[in-house]
Length: 145
Image 1: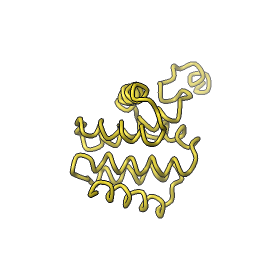
Image 2 (image 1 turned 60 degrees about the vertical axis):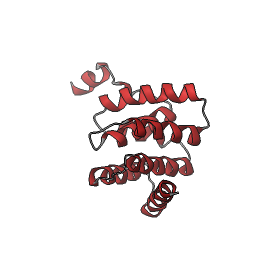
Image 3 (image 1 turned 120 degrees about the vertical axis):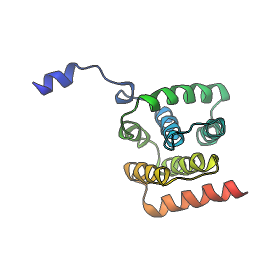
């Protein structure tokens, strides 16, 4: 009976097939939301990260962020986003992790919840601890530069 119910239940947007770039945008927004505060500096940082990582037009980035915000607010967990981001190359996944750290650092405070979230996402993306630590160091270096 559960099989039939699951077959015909409506799927949430995060459960559908989605563009890995949109999934990455949603993860970046989730990182900003982890500490309970989502400020303009974080959304500006997300836009900068998406522009750099995916070489997109500014209007496309704005649309990704808007849709990513909606998806992140509706999300139950990060798995639905990471399963799409895993379609990207390892190099791009590591840059997403670096982006998560940049978002976490952008408001001037890094919380234990943000660190735990990023570690969890990194493990779901199969980014090992060495690559994750390197991503964190690059994000911290960019912040102080």
